[in-house]
Length: 50
Image (cartoon, rainbow, N blue to C red; front, side, top):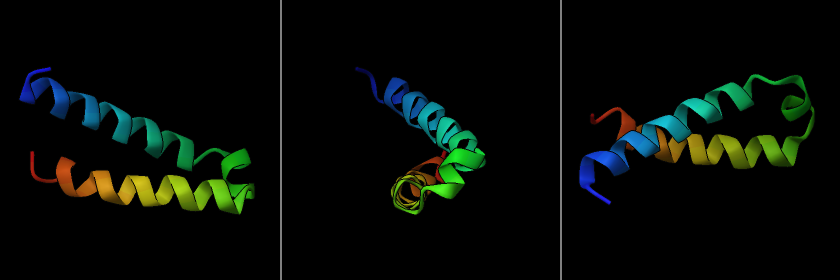
């Protein structure tokens, strides 16, 4: 996979995580929310560089 393709995939996943983090069922599940928020924060570092 080319570098730019990988960055596009990360950005897509980042946007999907943002959507999930706003869903009521995810907000009610603290463990799931924490896991998704952690992944989101890690991806944010990469996405903000692009």
